[in-house]
Amino acid sequence: MKKKFITIILFLLVSFPAYSKEKIVYLDLEKIMQDSKAGKSIIAQLKKKSETSISKFKKREKEIIEKEKKLIAQKNLLSKEEFEKNLINLRKDISNFHKDRNKDFNDITKKRVKASTNLINKLTPILEDYSKKNSIRIIVQKKHIVMGKKEDDITKEILELVNQNISSVKID
Figure: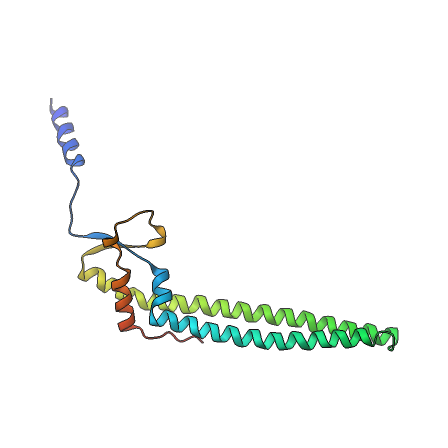
């Protein structure tokens, strides 16, 4: 009899949903990164660095192509040894060009990651403060949500707070 009574009590306690003032919300972090002043600042700085790098390498590529054309035009005029020496130098130039281009690309990628991490680190105290003020237990990234109510999306509020508190993020 006691076991049945305890089982019924446990069943009733478990079957009734628990209501709490604390809530779970979600945040579109990508939108914050793209639309905030700081995010736009990061994007603009990276775009400028990328464009500078691209123009520098296009210029170098044209120079290498001109060297190649010049070497091909001189093929019959140069001795075999001199041609081979110039060809080896051209191949070294091409190899160095590829190494430098990849290094620049990797540097820009590292700067993008570092700047994003920096922005997230600056965003964390804002989220902590917001969650304390609004009794939020968990903030989840929107990309990890299959479905959620629109009223649980705090992206707009956080975007406003980020724009008020973080104007830009410097890229080294």
